[in-house]
Length: 142
Image (tube, rainbow, N blue to C red):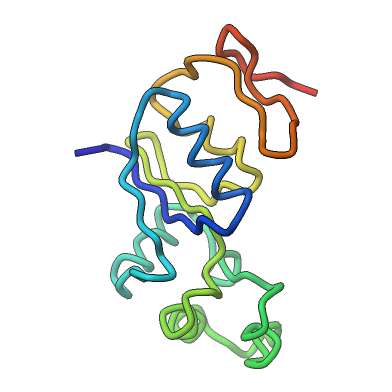
């Protein structure tokens, strides 16, 4: 069983790039398609706590339910925002990655490098062609 879990949306380029970076470290993670299999309330609360963020920071703002529900309004408590995310998982930003080194919302996808236990095993470029890892497995800094 993998020690790395990704809450993944295959329709999202950032999520695909993050998954590819995990695989480039030689690990096949547990992949949770969170739109099909949303986390339980307990799991979501733990993910938010482990990331050290407020529930509001995990909300996707560029999706229709965000506007329809008026979630930009400061009136909503973390508990209520979590309720909305559980009812409409599209509101959960992604990808979330859990490793033995931490839990992180990996936006941008390179954020996953900070919590991967194993080094990159070769060159990697994002889907848009942007190089991230060189042939020696080292991060390219721009």
